[in-house]
Length: 248
Ligand code: ADE
Image 1 (tube, rainbow, N blue to C red):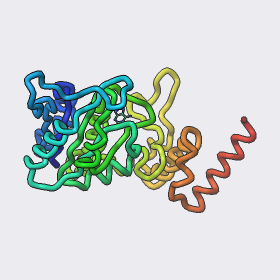
Image 2: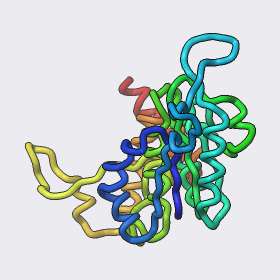
Image 3: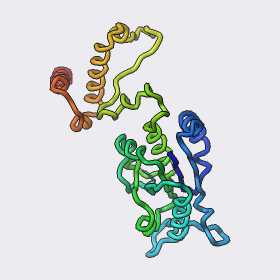
Image 4: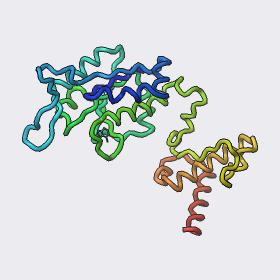
């Protein structure tokens, strides 16, 4: 997959994109990553990327001519067509399903802004999608772009390997993951559940599913409304609800 990021602060991507899984993805040729400095597309001697808003009001607005020129140039650099995604608190909210969807593209272009906002004509002319990572406002789209890239890369075949576990991840099947344990077996009196030490794979899988349901019930009951549950699992949920009534 090729990912191009347009930003006023390309240096923000240097360490995150050269560390851990992101580095592995690039090193293995699974991710072809490029940043582009929007300021390089200015034509005046002051390299001005923004201006005051028409109609008054505070803050500065990113200029349409500079950003459109930057996006159109970057689009020409790759072979495949690509969605051009604006990182903004006004976009559709990012989640597991959006990450899986974006991972199906051969190429993505992410546009990060700073300042008050973008000239609206940027959206009309070159943007095809707009993504928010949550209902809060960041000082710029760069950290949001890194979150999106990281979550998308987990779904690129080959990065995590066959046992990578992305199918078991929290949210992959609409539920949160249950607890994990490793050695030591006992630590400060806290023990690893016996079932995990039995080697009975079927019983362990069932225990994990129950733990996953219990954790989702306790922490994110809203997710259960959309989860695909068997009749047995619904019965289990009813049991959790009864337990809660007994121990409010
Ligand atoms: N830029 C500023 N806030 C943002 C958010 N919540 N998500 C994506 N990009 C942003």
